[in-house]
Length: 125
Image 1 (tube, helix red, strand yellow):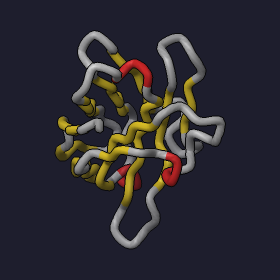
Image 2 (cartoon, rainbow, N blue to C red):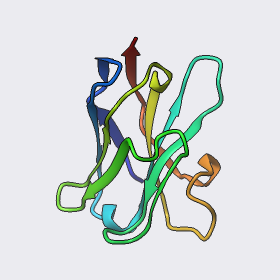
Image 3 (cartoon, rainbow, N blue to C red):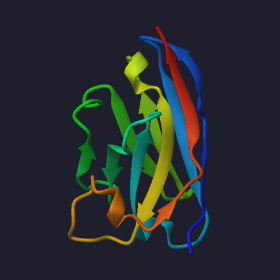
């Protein structure tokens, strides 16, 4: 079992930056693929970013490429999402997710085994 707790959400103006953190329980954190997803009201959950082991490939959703950065610190059991040049359309609840590594695609939310409770991010215009 892995428990995930997000933090760092809040209100930011368009063009600004915000950083999210996701702290994971358990001693096997480094073995998990980690991802960030978001869900805006009335919309489906959207893939934001994901990564496996440190130094491995990193994946981003098209709408955040070049603006968001995912990273992880296995010594702190934490994954991060740095969000820059934010837009009003980035407003959503952001979720952290973990999965046992699979051959399937990182962007498929159905492949993730554990989820955090979510943190609200609001970007004002």
